[in-house]
Image 1 (spheres, rainbow, N blue to C red):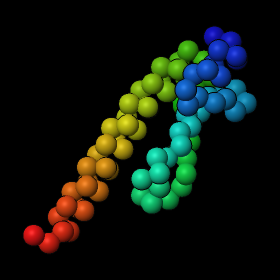
Image 2: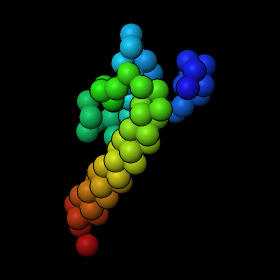
Image 3: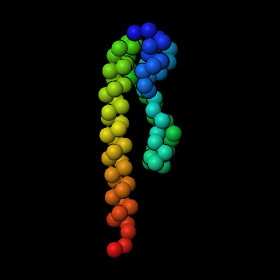
Length: 82
């Protein structure tokens, strides 16, 4: 995989020889995370492996976001008076 094709892979950036996952935190979850982006090493120097790991991490984070949103919604609903 060339450098140019990797730039088209969502949420993958390269620092030096190592690939990183980078994702902007959704606006409704900024307070929970306390920062506006999530970035961490995919611990690989291989572009194809980085692409696969990024897909897995994307699914994991979307699941985490869903759980957080459900918890926030439950707290809002339970805080209302009947």
